[in-house]
Structures are given as structure tokens and as C-alpha cells.
Length: 389
Image (tube, rainbow, N blue to C red; front, top):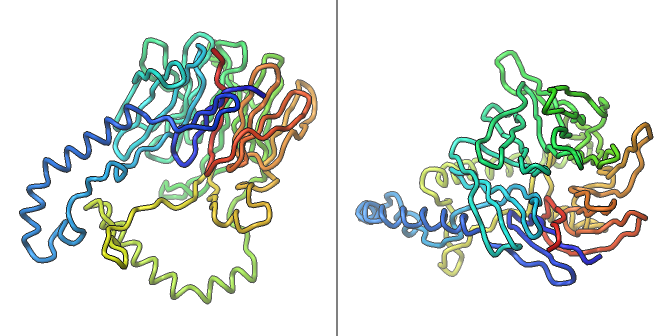
């Protein structure tokens, strides 16, 4: 299919137009943040250089201030299509800042819509009237839904001790949204003890009416979307309260416990060092050159740790999630139909077309069920259709 898609791969924003190869879109705002951080480090470098005259003090342990722009982590956390052809929005996050940006003409222009230091935003979606819904992540581990008008200003529309996230406008409606929600369990001290299964809820923003569309005590229903006919699409997977215990794996864990304990202590001090100095304890290779900080090939999706290396070791290494992660369709008054398996993310396009990913490859699924591979990449966590010019 000759379509344009955008997706997130390894925290980068990627764009594929028709039969062309995917390309990485650099965030201008993200580049500005990196430059500011590096300039701040350079302004303070004289203090660290003075201190470095002391034996084994501060930056002397790691060989000076990091000047590589890639040492400043910037991640794209969500994307959504806009109202106009060639337009889309994305959210960006650094260690101390979160922002929402709008892109025109598939990357030619970029405008910052919102940014804040003390709030985290994900799962954007723009409606037909220009209002944007999103998920607001809170410090206590909860998440509420938020809405932003075209004029700006972000406000909460749900609250409670729960995870309300992944909101999407019902196609053709400017008042109804669907989203996933899960309750949070806490112990006597108020600490989070667990998260219940995700269900699908609908919310009418005009009346305030909320309804549960589908739920089951043994099943998670994720990233729901609803078309104009009232057909619900979502990812279905088994709900897990904790890791599965396997006897052989347990024996292996017992034998490796001493070595893992030593490694854990080292990593603790390495993270402690990185937090206060920006550097890990390991900084050089055998040849003396500075070692690059390569992020591990893993991501956490809805509480599941997904490791690319472990997946590649399997015969079906292209799938980063198991076959039990199913894309289902539920027509009004009907039963669930399985459209695809190994589904990590999907997006509902025009005329019943669907694009989805298994974490490594991206596929197009036509209305008649024909499957076509569009692209292959690494650690793909979200994919969306983009409107054509």
C-alpha cells in the first residue's frame, strides 16, 4: 500500500513515505535542549578543571566533562497524526523537561506547543475540532487523562488512584474518547503493591458519562480505538500478576546469585556515580579510548520488560512480543475477532486499513485481511498512519 507512516524506534522519530526507505527525523527542539545542556557544562568546566588538580577528585576520575551531544538523552515518547495533510504531533522527554511539538509538511517546519519541567505527557491524539487528548503521568505512579485546546492550556479530565492512559477520539466524534484503565493496589503504607488488569472505558466529554466497554479479570485490553460505526479495536493479552516461576530457571538463579549480587553492587555505585556526576564507573576500553555509552536493547511496554537480544535468540526472533498479544476487533453487539498476533502497537487508518508492529517489523493489514510488510527496524514501540498531501 502506498501510505505514509511515522513510528518510534529506539526513542527516535522515523518517517516512511510510500516505497522510500524510512528516515530519521531530528527534533529541532531536542537539538536545542542538547546544545543548552552542553553549554551549561562548558560554563562550569573551569570549576571542574580546578578541582581536577586534586588527586582522584570529581571529573578527574572520568577524564573531564562530556562534550558529545549524544551524551544528553532525548527520547520521543509518543506520536499522533494532525488535522492537516503532512502534519503530526509528538511528545519529547529529557531528564528534566517534557514537550509537545507539531510538525508540518512531514518535517519541514516544527512548532513547540507546550513544555513543562514537572509533568510527563504521553499518548497524544488530536480530534476533529483540534483538541488534543493525552495521558499525564504523575509522581505517585498514577496516570490521568488530559486535554488541550487549540489555543493551548492543558487540564486534567480524569482523576483517581488508577492508570488512565492511551486515549483516542472515536472516529467522527468531537466529544467521545476511548481509553484503557487499570486500578492500583496499595499496601498499608500507601506504596504501590500492584496494578490490576486493564479494561477499556469510554468517556463523553460533554455529559461526563463514563462506561466500561470490555473487561476481564484475566485479560488486559490495551490501546483501544473505535471507528465511526462503533467497532472497537484493541490489543488483548493475558493479565499477569507476577513473573512465572520455572523450576529449572529457579535453580539457575540460585547458582548465579553470588555473581549477580556482586554485579548488582557494582551497578548500584555506577548508577550512583552517573546520577551525581553524569559518568559511569567504567569509562575506558582496553585501548584507553573513552567507551561509548550504548543503551541496552530493551524497552518496557505496559509493565513488560522486552529484551531484543533474548527475542533474537529464538526462532521467531522478529517478534518482540508473544503470540498471545492479539489485535482484536469487536463489532457492536458482536464477539471478538482476532485480526493479527504478536502485536505491540497498531493504528486504525481510513477505510478499515490497519498498520501494526511486532516490535521489529511494521505491517499493513487491508480491510480484506491481506497482510503486507512495510518496514523493518529496531525496538519499534508505536506506529501511526499520517494523512496524505
